Image (cartoon, rainbow, N blue to C red; front, side, top):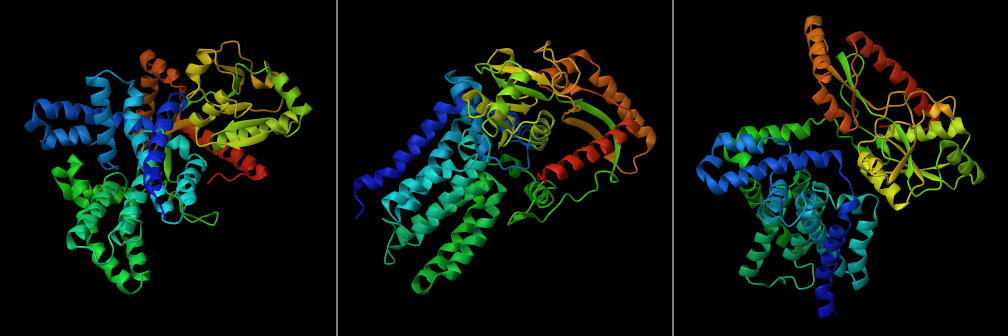
Length: 497
């Protein structure tokens, strides 16, 4: 029999999770996607301020479009919570730093996820109640993502919450209403199910799949339980009310905005479908023949980096240490380019170091700071401030351009021959068939803009160094890069899709 301690266990685990996120968020760094959501939340925060001072103006179509139109591919609830938290704790009370305030609701969602996973686990045993959230947070990348003002952990939490609400409505959890419960108790369970499902809808489109999953479960039930499940399902129809209530963009011309939202995700070219390790959906375009190249716009500076506390001071120190203990040193890499850089480094230097894969530069930088990896290959976007403050040391760069934060850093080829320039680059293309005068006009305007000292300084500070080419030069560059890296990918055996 489960006692009072078991009843308190989910809440305790949830509180510990939220506190752990809050205590460790300072060293997480920032991801690219989170920057978009910070920007979206900042706009919504301005809408909140306007709502408090001029409600009629804030509720107008022009205002909702202006303040909520950015990042319209995601619903409003999570961004509204990020914005509200920053508005209260930073803008009004001046209690928390910017990033901490934006992220505070994410910590709460992480705590709720632990609560609901523990509740599901306790339906089996006390051990399962503890292990369910623990196993989730020990999975690769989940604890890191739990810190971020993003949507991944919130939708995981609300998916679990919908599952708990469904199980409770069906009487499958301890303390749930028995089959003979009053209509009032059943109505409460149904209303709670619709609310949690509505919150999931209002956070991310992944919730679209939940009704189908619950319908399948209902049909798999037997006897009286199936009847109860089928009677509970209609409560899901009330869920979209939460979506509408928390997304002011839908308050004016909802049909258009809903259509845009759905079509965006149905045709999102970056979504890949994996099944048993195979990719079943590739990008629906030919990168060489479906576009008209305009110009290269920027290149990163690929760097070989160690923790400043490391005894490795030079590239040859690293090579010597790696050769003295083959397979013992490891390096962090968060993109396909940096993973391949590690492969090429080992090949050219004759070393055997071990790749530790991460999801992006922020995770790699954190691993380098904590000593989880011995060195890394990366651009400066996530590590620039740490390089400038002396917490990270750059051993070498992979192209000859100057690197102002470490002006004396040597080129990698000074110590290891056979390593060509390695960089991540960005460029601008137009649809195939765009008239040449338009291509040339765009190229000229981009080149002029990137030559502006103010723009160049901002780009340099972000680790993206402006670089321009003619359309013809850019077309040649794309093909040479594709040929070069295709050969390396094939040789290394790495998957890049």
